[in-house]
Amino acid sequence: MKKGIVIIAALFFTLTAFAQSEVTFESFLQQFPKASLPFALSTETLRTQLESRATNAPVEKAKCLAWEYYDFIPTLEDDARENRMPVYPEPVAALETADYHAVIYNTGRNFARQYKTYNIAVFDKNGKFLTTRCIAGVNPTALASATIDAELNVTIKEYSVSWSKDYLTNGIEGNTIVALTEVSTRTVKATAAKKEGEDWINAPMKREPGTAVSLQAK
Image (cartoon, rainbow, N blue to C red; front, side, top):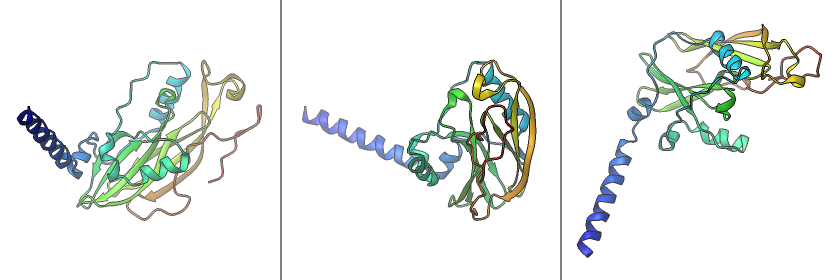
């Protein structure tokens, strides 16, 4: 009996040590589909996400990043604390340049609604975390697309969303997007230290029914 317990305990510690040894930066990168530069989170793709929500199209279940890899992106804990809600990051893409690794991930909390929020995290070649910022996403009133070039410069284009029927009164189910109006364009360097106000804020722009949409202050 004692021998059996010893064997089980040894097996447990062996498996635990093996699992811990597998949590490396390389295995972290493998959680993200490899992509090439330039890389785009296009206006068309984001618009389709919102239109799919409007038509109640079936939603593919998102694959979330396993919790053991959260430490590679320290800001995940900060995000959860700030919003008082857990974060379930969805791996989107892994990018690489001669000097950096970068990953794109979605932190949108309500996957069923397809209101996604895309972030880029940058690391040096040794896996040291450098910075992260929110670069794109979609909600019923706003859409932000992003294009990332070979030097990890990110061009963000923000649009306001116009519906055929007022969404505050009618919701978006069965509604139709009639226009995307460009509000702003800016470029940020993903490898640089983040400055205040550089994050795109994925929150619906507030407006009264029957009035024009105004850009939320950053």
